[in-house]
Length: 133
Image (cartoon, rainbow, N blue to C red):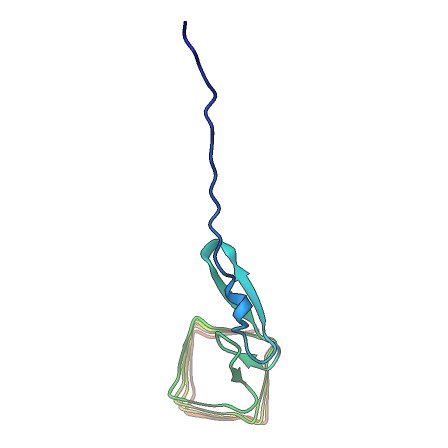
């Protein structure tokens, strides 16, 4: 006599702590838990940027900074000095730039959509393969 039995499947669930419980996002940024990779991402309020929304774009001086593959969306940049910054593969959408001094900046492969630049001083700025719409 031959006996057969159904296979029994066992599933295990490993629980880890949600990193958003530590409230890593600053300036009222919203923490989004990415369960598939056990990580988080911050969604910043208008006027803030950075991995943890730690950069206030209304009172920052950018000097000798390399911005590569960055998305800047719906931000007001006011009274900022930007000097010696290299921007490569940056997407800017719906950004208002007012009263900004921009000196010695290289902008390459950047998509700029719906950006308003008012009262800005542009000195020694190089634009290469930039799309303005």
